[in-house]
Image 1 (cartoon, rainbow, N blue to C red):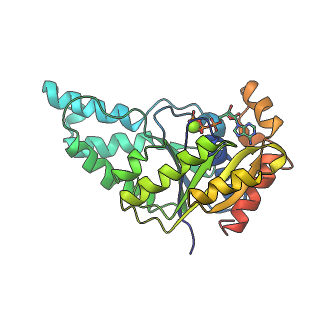
Image 2 (cartoon, helix red, strand yellow):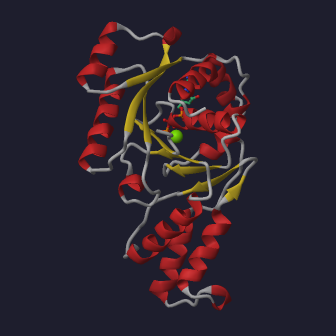
Length: 257
Ligand SMILES: Nc1ncnc2c1ncn2[C@@H]1O[C@H](COP(=O)(O)OP(=O)(O)OP(=O)(O)O)[C@@H](O)[C@H]1O
Ligand SMILES: [Mg+2]
């Protein structure tokens, strides 16, 4: 099975965005492009890891159209609502080098968004067909996946750090995905920030208790910390950095690259 549509999820701060960014970087290097990167975490910052400045979000567009509906304000340019949404959505797809990125942004406030969401979902479906891979950085609640806004998923990478609680959180995301009947063919765990890239027997036992399929361990990498503390995009980490080597191995194992 080729994993065309890849989602990354897990507890806050475990390294989802870092891993997503590096994964995208390797897809591009392996010429598996174009890639659509979707930032589906409301505390979005995938663009920073990739080294891009982005302001427009799907959330903004949704608010804008919903506001015009509620207040009876006409849509600019004489377009109807569907046309305008399509037009704005195309604008929100930001073009990077070999990949595009879309930021979902904040989720909705008051009012009914069903119509707007429906159009967005259709448009996203249409757009995403044009890419070799879609890679989605999610929050633990899997909101956009569960609502179907980002379409189906072939591979869900659950990221945890080196702690029981975070492995348990990954276990809960897996159960959630099953309860939501998302029918994801493959779900695997990546333990990130492991000292020396190793995990103890007790961590391994917890992974088994949570019924998780361990697909890789990424070491605690001082260079990641250095880059982040200087605001340098992680995709510019050297190829021989500990985290990059480990993530590349995982991707090869999954035959993504
Ligand atoms: N392998 C690693 N080694 C060292 N530090 C890491 C590693 N991976 C991530 N980090 C650090 O952990 C912190 C959280 O990483 P990141 O933002 O990628 O996590 P996240 O799961 O996306 O967080 P959030 O839930 O806030 O979106 C960052 O400061 C990052 O530098
Ligand atoms: Mg993040």
